[in-house]
Image (tube, rainbow, N blue to C red):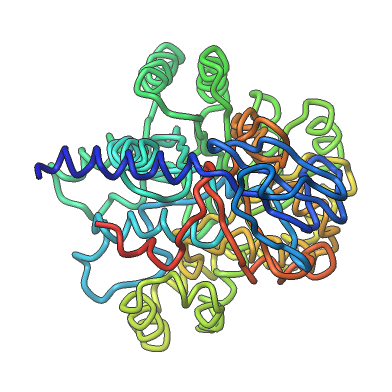
Length: 459
């Protein structure tokens, strides 16, 4: 068979799998819109949620469905991570050629699905790579999480996002810059750059507001240029995510029309009120603050989490631990310590936003050191609950809120009739103990019961 014939056969097999009929019975159903069904059943047919039953449901035989007994379990919408970096492995290789390895990058999208994270948004990765991956995974040629992406970052010359290429020789440096960043010099250029990215099919636009720190300063994008970027993005119906570091960054992000504020060390009260009024979402990325804290200390305990061990390449795990415990990363640890915002401060900022009535969404900044692809939303939610966020609010942030921000709520984010049967079933009750999110029983993706143990064996 030719490669094209094998691909077509694989897609046809997947369509058959997604056309099966299932009845998940006796589950606690977290709908995602504030409603919880203590004992319910969900009928899956032709890849969609065909019915949600409260209490007794018809028999599986009468529905011609295969039955799954979910007594003692919780069924939720698939989880969503709105902020990842697919091009970063989350750890360190001693062999530099392993970075950017195609199979390793595909594994990351498989790892998310394995963990029940059924949609992710890349917040800064090579454009051509994202286009290629989206085609592979959206057609069913490969099975992995739903991938959305921002495309190149809008920043200043010498701004955050450009520092990664300084030591790369030409002509590779120019190619990387073209794939990763846009540096508009005028409003007209900003409009043209966004328009071209919209034509190429990006799902969002990301803007950088970040002046760095005194020891490592960055040039900061002019606010008027950023406003031109946001205006053109909105003209193309693309949401705008804004990377922020300090209070003035958040103030400017709100002023130019951001749809989401990413990171943020602090948010002034007046700005919080304006965010609430405009419906701007907040993505605190607590995972990356925790990761930097551990990196600076040389603490590798995040590598010992069960789901991380299950999905992460063993060579990556071993070499990361080896490098962190040695002297190879001393320079990186020193840099991280200068940028470091304490996890406690980030948690306090999140709690303040929650109490201020801000729409919250879950993002991890995965791909950064110690934020491994896969169980990112699970860890993010655990940190939120430690910060004082109720579990129900955190779960809604990871489902319906995130789906609305990514504009995929027509098919994802809630357990409702007519939406894709993209679902997570976990043992226990994450509303009482969020660690239950890591006790995965079953994952459905567009009606297909995912053979999780086979995900990493795809050719």
